[in-house]
Image (cartoon, rainbow, N blue to C red):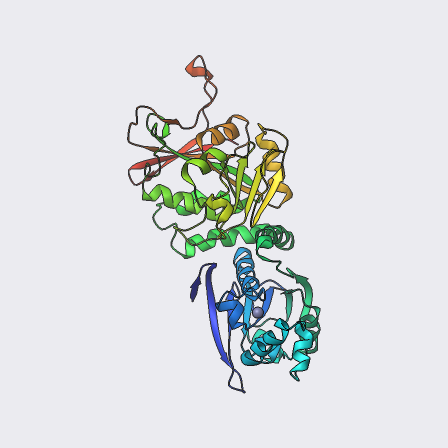
Length: 428
Ligand SMILES: [Zn+2]
């Protein structure tokens, strides 16, 4: 097993007859052949400068990252890391000589030819052998290179579809991943994908600290689309003190619960004020799982361009802004909506158009309250912390009622998160 920043992969080593050692990294591919009929496969050609040293002369490193993220997001697929493919098969030092010729004005093909090499000297026989070893005969090839598809066909590997393709330069990466998530979903039975997301939490022990784990999460795994919210507040109803200090309000168990919900979601939604106050990363860190797309609701363009959701490469970000907001820099998809306030239904429509069907509304209090009172939530997980703050940033608020009888009594369940109590409201 190989834990990576994209998730845990099974790694298998191979030694070819010519002494070259290759590896495959896979998820969801078992020896018994019980994978989908044509899993995602990336044949990644070794590139020391791009993969390991961060070279900007090529996009190999980003293609490698994107392919692993794609496979992890899908929960199934193989990346064969093909050693011996440096410089399209001419070797590392020859590649550096070609770089020198390129610096003198030759393009990459002519540079190879000048050095007496073919434009592309790569052979895929070993990679095809590895796929056979894994019991894979038909694939969806993660590549933009039609030549790879033709080479594989000659080796008996049927490419039913080419997906992904060119990973554009860095600023486009997030957009690409976002689109691919949508695309993947299109190709994959949703139930299977979600069951795997839940299975991953079970397998990695992320549900072990709950007495009735499946009962708490089975409905999230069983439905193709939902909108939930999670919020933690003091017993007197505040998310944070008057000075905005709320980071350490709830305990470790509540934080893990939040990360589990993120890992089960396609998208995590926060309001601009939360980004301004807390500058959150919004990634899955306390359990094993795939990062959701980060969605920021920012009708007035208030969040700083230095915010982590706009600058950290850990997950794609969808920035919903009004018409007058500054343009996004870096790897962010910006969608300009009309002037705010926006209805939750409008926001959810934008997300659904991108295949983001399982949505966690994470904060702050005003955003959660807006989704709640608009009837846009299926469930609310409201954690109460046994502490009194006196005053501060309001937590979840609903329209006031005049008599207790007018208050809606939703079905609820309660469970302990350390000293905190989480109440689950079934709203729909
Ligand atoms: Zn490269």
